[in-house]
Image (tube, rainbow, N blue to C red; front, top):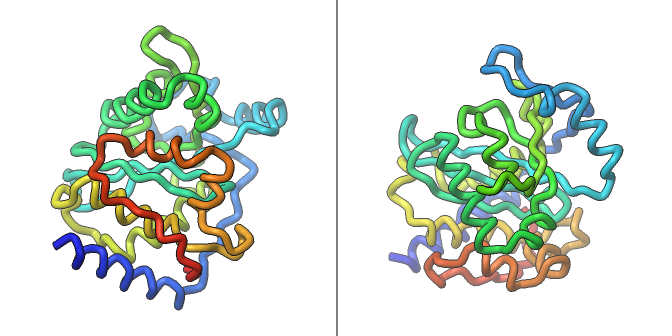
Length: 239
Protein backbone atom coordinates (compact mmCIF):
# COMPACT_ATOMS: atom_id res chain seq x y z
CA UNK A 1 0.00 0.00 0.00
CA UNK A 2 1.00 3.65 -0.28
CA UNK A 3 1.40 3.87 3.51
CA UNK A 4 3.74 0.89 3.58
CA UNK A 5 5.72 2.29 0.66
CA UNK A 6 6.16 5.60 2.49
CA UNK A 7 7.19 3.80 5.68
CA UNK A 8 9.85 1.86 3.80
CA UNK A 9 11.20 5.10 2.34
CA UNK A 10 11.45 6.75 5.76
CA UNK A 11 12.99 3.66 7.35
CA UNK A 12 15.67 3.33 4.70
CA UNK A 13 16.45 7.02 4.67
CA UNK A 14 17.03 6.93 8.43
CA UNK A 15 19.76 4.41 7.79
CA UNK A 16 21.56 6.99 5.69
CA UNK A 17 22.24 9.05 8.83
CA UNK A 18 24.70 6.34 9.88
CA UNK A 19 26.72 6.64 6.69
CA UNK A 20 29.45 9.20 6.14
CA UNK A 21 28.71 11.49 3.23
CA UNK A 22 30.83 10.70 0.20
CA UNK A 23 32.65 13.76 -1.00
CA UNK A 24 33.69 14.05 -4.62
CA UNK A 25 35.88 16.84 -5.92
CA UNK A 26 34.67 18.10 -9.26
CA UNK A 27 37.45 17.91 -11.80
CA UNK A 28 38.65 21.05 -13.52
CA UNK A 29 39.02 19.23 -16.83
CA UNK A 30 35.82 18.34 -18.64
CA UNK A 31 36.35 16.27 -21.79
CA UNK A 32 34.62 13.64 -23.90
CA UNK A 33 35.93 10.11 -24.35
CA UNK A 34 37.50 9.41 -27.72
CA UNK A 35 36.28 5.81 -27.46
CA UNK A 36 32.68 6.88 -28.06
CA UNK A 37 30.94 8.26 -31.16
CA UNK A 38 32.43 11.64 -32.12
CA UNK A 39 30.69 14.76 -30.90
CA UNK A 40 31.02 18.25 -32.32
CA UNK A 41 34.03 20.07 -30.86
CA UNK A 42 31.80 22.71 -29.24
CA UNK A 43 31.07 20.17 -26.49
CA UNK A 44 34.65 19.05 -25.93
CA UNK A 45 37.98 19.77 -24.22
CA UNK A 46 38.53 23.28 -22.92
CA UNK A 47 35.19 24.67 -24.03
CA UNK A 48 33.47 23.99 -20.71
CA UNK A 49 36.15 25.84 -18.73
CA UNK A 50 36.09 28.73 -21.19
CA UNK A 51 32.31 28.97 -21.05
CA UNK A 52 32.34 28.92 -17.24
CA UNK A 53 34.85 31.75 -17.15
CA UNK A 54 32.74 33.81 -19.55
CA UNK A 55 29.51 33.00 -17.66
CA UNK A 56 30.52 32.63 -13.98
CA UNK A 57 26.93 32.96 -12.76
CA UNK A 58 25.55 30.22 -15.01
CA UNK A 59 24.57 27.36 -12.70
CA UNK A 60 25.51 23.83 -13.73
CA UNK A 61 22.96 20.99 -13.55
CA UNK A 62 24.40 17.48 -13.48
CA UNK A 63 22.54 14.75 -15.39
CA UNK A 64 22.81 11.00 -15.01
CA UNK A 65 20.81 7.78 -15.17
CA UNK A 66 19.93 5.30 -12.43
CA UNK A 67 19.47 1.87 -13.96
CA UNK A 68 17.51 -1.09 -12.67
CA UNK A 69 17.60 -4.35 -14.55
CA UNK A 70 19.55 -4.02 -17.79
CA UNK A 71 17.28 -3.14 -20.68
CA UNK A 72 14.35 -2.10 -18.50
CA UNK A 73 13.04 1.24 -17.26
CA UNK A 74 15.52 3.80 -15.91
CA UNK A 75 15.54 7.08 -14.01
CA UNK A 76 16.91 10.26 -15.54
CA UNK A 77 18.23 12.37 -12.67
CA UNK A 78 18.79 16.12 -12.83
CA UNK A 79 20.83 17.48 -9.95
CA UNK A 80 20.86 21.12 -8.86
CA UNK A 81 24.35 21.35 -7.41
CA UNK A 82 24.09 24.48 -5.26
CA UNK A 83 20.69 23.53 -3.86
CA UNK A 84 21.54 19.80 -3.63
CA UNK A 85 18.08 19.09 -4.98
CA UNK A 86 17.60 16.21 -7.36
CA UNK A 87 14.76 15.43 -9.76
CA UNK A 88 14.14 11.93 -11.11
CA UNK A 89 12.11 11.05 -14.19
CA UNK A 90 11.04 7.50 -14.93
CA UNK A 91 11.20 6.43 -18.57
CA UNK A 92 10.85 3.07 -20.27
CA UNK A 93 13.97 3.05 -22.42
CA UNK A 94 17.43 4.41 -21.76
CA UNK A 95 17.73 6.11 -25.15
CA UNK A 96 18.35 9.64 -26.36
CA UNK A 97 14.77 10.27 -27.49
CA UNK A 98 13.46 9.58 -24.00
CA UNK A 99 15.76 12.24 -22.56
CA UNK A 100 14.85 14.68 -25.33
CA UNK A 101 11.15 14.11 -24.63
CA UNK A 102 11.63 14.92 -20.94
CA UNK A 103 13.36 18.20 -21.71
CA UNK A 104 10.80 19.11 -24.35
CA UNK A 105 8.04 18.60 -21.80
CA UNK A 106 9.82 20.70 -19.18
CA UNK A 107 10.43 23.43 -21.74
CA UNK A 108 6.75 23.62 -22.67
CA UNK A 109 5.37 23.40 -19.14
CA UNK A 110 7.82 25.81 -17.50
CA UNK A 111 7.82 28.45 -20.27
CA UNK A 112 11.01 29.41 -22.07
CA UNK A 113 12.15 32.11 -19.62
CA UNK A 114 11.78 29.87 -16.57
CA UNK A 115 13.48 26.94 -18.32
CA UNK A 116 16.43 29.13 -19.27
CA UNK A 117 16.80 30.23 -15.66
CA UNK A 118 16.61 26.69 -14.26
CA UNK A 119 18.78 24.88 -16.82
CA UNK A 120 21.49 27.23 -18.12
CA UNK A 121 24.26 24.58 -18.28
CA UNK A 122 24.00 20.78 -18.34
CA UNK A 123 26.88 18.44 -17.53
CA UNK A 124 26.46 14.84 -18.71
CA UNK A 125 28.50 11.68 -19.19
CA UNK A 126 29.03 9.84 -22.47
CA UNK A 127 26.06 7.51 -22.10
CA UNK A 128 24.02 6.79 -25.21
CA UNK A 129 21.00 8.57 -23.70
CA UNK A 130 22.93 11.86 -24.09
CA UNK A 131 24.17 11.16 -27.61
CA UNK A 132 22.03 13.84 -29.32
CA UNK A 133 23.17 17.04 -27.58
CA UNK A 134 21.76 19.49 -30.12
CA UNK A 135 18.22 18.14 -29.65
CA UNK A 136 18.52 18.78 -25.91
CA UNK A 137 20.11 22.20 -26.33
CA UNK A 138 17.64 23.52 -28.90
CA UNK A 139 13.87 23.75 -29.11
CA UNK A 140 11.80 22.72 -32.14
CA UNK A 141 12.52 26.06 -33.85
CA UNK A 142 16.27 25.75 -33.35
CA UNK A 143 16.45 28.31 -30.52
CA UNK A 144 19.07 27.55 -27.89
CA UNK A 145 17.55 26.83 -24.49
CA UNK A 146 20.59 25.43 -22.63
CA UNK A 147 24.27 24.56 -23.04
CA UNK A 148 25.43 20.94 -22.75
CA UNK A 149 28.93 19.62 -22.04
CA UNK A 150 30.42 16.15 -21.53
CA UNK A 151 32.62 15.04 -18.68
CA UNK A 152 35.33 12.42 -18.95
CA UNK A 153 34.49 8.78 -19.54
CA UNK A 154 34.50 6.65 -16.36
CA UNK A 155 35.05 9.70 -14.15
CA UNK A 156 32.02 9.93 -11.82
CA UNK A 157 33.81 12.43 -9.56
CA UNK A 158 33.30 15.05 -12.27
CA UNK A 159 29.59 14.83 -11.52
CA UNK A 160 30.26 14.10 -7.86
CA UNK A 161 27.28 15.86 -6.33
CA UNK A 162 24.88 13.93 -8.56
CA UNK A 163 26.60 10.60 -7.92
CA UNK A 164 26.59 11.27 -4.19
CA UNK A 165 22.82 11.78 -4.20
CA UNK A 166 22.36 8.48 -6.02
CA UNK A 167 23.57 6.81 -2.83
CA UNK A 168 20.35 8.01 -1.19
CA UNK A 169 18.24 6.63 -4.04
CA UNK A 170 19.96 3.25 -3.78
CA UNK A 171 19.05 3.04 -0.08
CA UNK A 172 15.44 2.94 -1.22
CA UNK A 173 15.48 1.34 -4.67
CA UNK A 174 18.08 -1.33 -5.30
CA UNK A 175 19.12 -2.84 -8.64
CA UNK A 176 15.64 -4.01 -9.57
CA UNK A 177 12.91 -3.61 -12.16
CA UNK A 178 12.13 0.11 -12.06
CA UNK A 179 9.09 -0.34 -14.29
CA UNK A 180 7.16 -1.66 -11.29
CA UNK A 181 7.05 1.88 -9.87
CA UNK A 182 4.94 4.82 -11.00
CA UNK A 183 6.27 8.33 -11.52
CA UNK A 184 4.16 9.33 -8.51
CA UNK A 185 6.07 6.88 -6.31
CA UNK A 186 9.38 8.15 -7.67
CA UNK A 187 8.29 11.74 -6.88
CA UNK A 188 7.37 10.65 -3.36
CA UNK A 189 10.80 9.07 -2.87
CA UNK A 190 12.57 12.18 -4.14
CA UNK A 191 10.42 14.43 -1.94
CA UNK A 192 11.70 12.61 1.14
CA UNK A 193 15.30 12.78 -0.07
CA UNK A 194 14.97 16.48 -0.90
CA UNK A 195 13.34 17.19 2.46
CA UNK A 196 16.26 16.07 4.59
CA UNK A 197 18.25 18.99 5.97
CA UNK A 198 21.97 19.20 5.18
CA UNK A 199 24.71 20.82 7.21
CA UNK A 200 26.21 22.32 4.07
CA UNK A 201 22.91 24.10 3.44
CA UNK A 202 22.86 25.69 6.87
CA UNK A 203 20.67 22.87 8.23
CA UNK A 204 18.05 23.55 5.61
CA UNK A 205 16.70 20.96 3.22
CA UNK A 206 17.37 21.07 -0.54
CA UNK A 207 13.69 21.76 -1.09
CA UNK A 208 13.70 24.73 1.31
CA UNK A 209 16.68 26.25 -0.51
CA UNK A 210 15.11 25.60 -3.91
CA UNK A 211 11.77 27.06 -2.81
CA UNK A 212 13.47 30.19 -1.47
CA UNK A 213 15.30 30.75 -4.77
CA UNK A 214 12.67 29.71 -7.31
CA UNK A 215 9.36 29.37 -5.45
CA UNK A 216 7.05 26.45 -4.69
CA UNK A 217 5.10 26.94 -7.91
CA UNK A 218 8.14 26.12 -10.06
CA UNK A 219 8.61 22.76 -8.39
CA UNK A 220 4.89 22.03 -8.64
CA UNK A 221 5.05 22.73 -12.38
CA UNK A 222 7.98 20.37 -12.84
CA UNK A 223 6.04 17.45 -11.40
CA UNK A 224 2.70 18.53 -12.90
CA UNK A 225 0.54 15.65 -14.04
CA UNK A 226 1.96 13.24 -11.47
CA UNK A 227 -0.19 11.92 -8.60
CA UNK A 228 -0.69 14.60 -5.95
CA UNK A 229 0.76 12.48 -3.14
CA UNK A 230 4.01 14.38 -2.76
CA UNK A 231 4.32 16.34 0.45
CA UNK A 232 7.52 17.86 1.76
CA UNK A 233 8.13 17.02 5.40
CA UNK A 234 10.94 19.56 5.95
CA UNK A 235 12.53 17.02 8.28
CA UNK A 236 15.55 18.17 10.27
CA UNK A 237 17.26 14.81 10.14
CA UNK A 238 20.53 14.78 8.28
CA UNK A 239 21.63 12.03 5.92
